[in-house]
Length: 141
Image: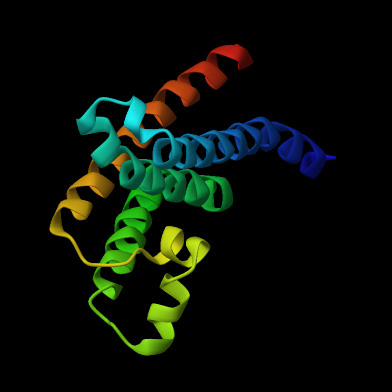
């Protein structure tokens, strides 16, 4: 009986993170396709920031019980790890990067500015997460 209550209690949070992931992916894809309609600063920086936000929301979805700080640390390590992996330019990984999905996941070339974009995206995601947590907690009361 206690397990059922626990599962029901966790589901809305997981649902919210799942929705946040889908929305973030759609916004990221839209920023690439329709970036020419955005202000230049958003067009240049939003894709990487949104990618890092999606990573953060993914860690919250699957490891949310470990806490927000844990998800932040993993998001930074994962995002920075992907960026630094772009320094590795073997033929096999470049073939993966040459495809759209591979490029979206692994990127194509190391840029220091991407580390800043990822950091800002994670900060924004944490701020949104705090808003979502406050909203979910207010609904419980």
